[in-house]
Length: 371
Image (cartoon, rainbow, N blue to C red; front, side, top):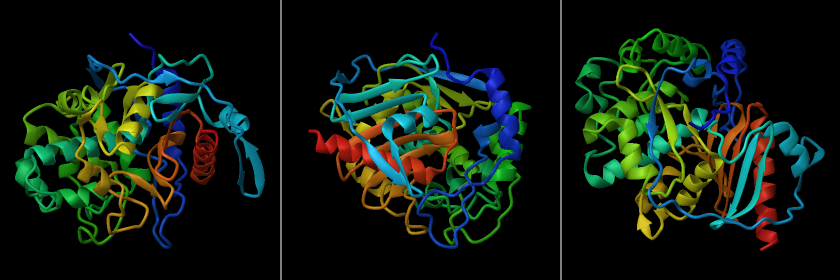
């Protein structure tokens, strides 16, 4: 059994801090758009149930090819280095130039065998699986409503919300992530299903009219995926994404103990496998000569969704530089389209996201310079 990097005691301490929480906004958020991201459903998790997903029978090989990277960048008027950044902002880091690991770094007793908490990076995995199901015809259209797949939510505020609006975080559900997410997690811990929580939400504004980052949207998406495919969420991830993408180790995926994977948070996996996911996306959904995620879905996922310019379909967009999956406390899978570099970082330290993005851009540029 692989060791998770977040102990129950530390999780409880983190949960207590995050229940009080400070709201933060992503770098480059559209003017006037408030985005609460500090307290998500997984932030107060006390390890509910988990389903274990098996690794690929034929993992995607990554070659150790360490390279001296002289990374410096400026943030808030201060010049910083890669070593300084890692010392205060990371427990695990993998940098890929193609299938070559040019930088790998761990601290605090962690290693390539450590399972790190994804927090909300899992939302991007849910998106990729959704694209596969759409290509397979399991999902009819992104304009389908939630009620078509989940009759139990048909009369709820989610009933007439389209799948597209769930994916782009514009469901219209009245949800404050800082307040409501910890409350939902407390209910899940007490044995309430995520769908029961969804059924009791209210409509705040017209679907599609406003961006509002809400973990409950992804919880509903995960349930739609399971219902549409006829396969439990975690099993679909294993069969269609984790295995075909060539992941080398297991991933534990949290559930609500009522048969529903959370979807919005809480994968536990190695940093190398997080990097493999980024590489899959950089390669337009292909791995080991096989199309795993439709290329059209990859393109759609990382393009502005029409509500705000820096969010696609469960992926954050870093202008013309690239895109990234983001999780609480500084977790990131950064895909530099500009330099064709992938960076995966896990940490317990929450930082200003603009600092992390500046570091990611500088790392990618240095990898490109030293080719």
